[in-house]
Length: 335
Ligand code: KG4
Ligand code: ZN
Image 1 (cartoon, protein in one colour):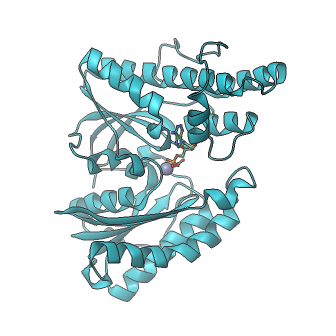
Image 2 (tube, protein in one colour; image 1 turned 120 degrees about the vertical axis):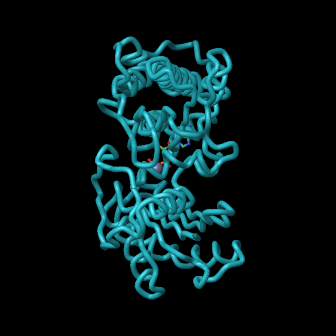
């Protein structure tokens, strides 16, 4: 079965074609980062309008890459939520428009389920069950994943998400949006030990996170020191964030007794986080799996893939046109 995936939940239009037997046949992405940069964050109305402009040209490009036409598509998957309502509506409309025109089943996919399952697009792919560290701009969660739709929340952030902390810290340091890659680049020239930042909830005895205090500590530091040593502040921040994320992930591995850790979401692209987790995995004898680097941040491939798994398990679903801007991953059931 070939599934066309459409992602439009935030500031990236992602389209992909996934084949149940041959894997990913093509994917294309348009990032709106440059458009939103001058506003310091995503402007929802501009995002929606840009998704409208990009969705069909990207679809054509993906089909060309794959050597296919619309006649070769068997089903359509789109991001139903969570995300920006107007942006989600664009993907839902394109998906259902194509579905009606072509007489194809249409399935709505949970964006975080897409992220969670995306490491299975890499080779080798993690088998179930595994622990997932989901670290994106909107979420920071540790989940136990026993299969498609079988997710148990083990811990999550009580305030800011990890990616949000990177973005807000970047703003304090006068760097652009999105902050993650910018902090990471600046930190390479910095001394992570010139300043000591807090490790919030490191010893809280549970698997929850908190990043708001870390951001406030950076604010205090910037007020005191100015931006003369911005690279050192970026490095200290990154080290603190990575240490907490890694420590909690390792604790989840220990408590669960599982030996596979999956890292997904935009912050999963962070080089220092990867190095830290890889080193811990070697030492503690577990495996860590990441999505291919270009599929860490939002993309259509993860939506096409999750859609294919859902369609394989449950048939076409009810095919209703709907979006869910707020949607808890825990509400999902197995297909
Ligand atoms: O998963 P994603 O593309 O979108 C959401 O669903 O939120 O994640 C975006 C987040 C942003 O906060 C961005 O700053 C962060 O991922 N990010 C990074 C890196 N690349 C992206 N954070 C740290 N290091 C990176 N290399
Ligand atoms: Zn995402």
